[in-house]
Length: 284
Image 1 (tube, rainbow, N blue to C red):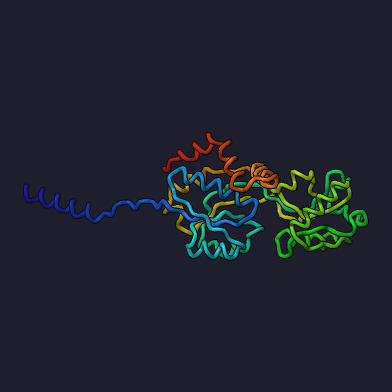
Image 2 (tube, helix red, strand yellow):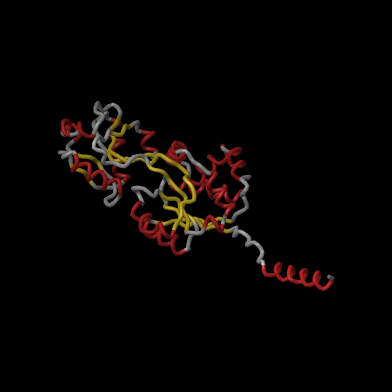
């Protein structure tokens, strides 16, 4: 009997030595971001939430989606804030088998053609009847952007007499500022969240043909396996949500003279209780 008991104990000890201990979660996370006015606040706020929860976070900025998605799929960065529909849809569709959505972090990105609220039209199909009042043009931004692509499609869909002018965001902003100061008619390509939407009191024209995408969501996405490898980080990230109006307000403060870092820090300071709840999220 004693021999049998010793044999069972020995077998149990061997079994225990074969069971590897649970792997500790890596507490260092590298975030990717695009240096844009909507994604920078999302990245800064989520970074602080992770740091408060005990993580070391590095942020790597990118200039275009293709480079950012390539870095994510290769593992050069762990996570990236991105829209996966419309704005970055091609990159998401190409790489999604190697990636995973972690959680939504904001909602409400919208792009379209807008006019000042004092202009008495409300729809894209009213532009032609008033083409002369708009100087025969829609003032656009940088060529190659998703917004310019959609606006060019709308010119065709509505058979518009107005010409879409390529330029820059700065030039469009200057034209909008000048027109609103003089109460002149102007049509521009614009988006929310943007400080311009708050400052210049514009309205998006209705799009009965549905050329422009509906409001879009922002997601944190990671390389396949991130959630499994970082269960607690995933819980912290999933708790973070930044309303689109807050992103717009942060950018309005930047336009009024604050640095982006300071504007984000001020938002974090005014939401201390919320940040504390995010910090204390426990993984199951």
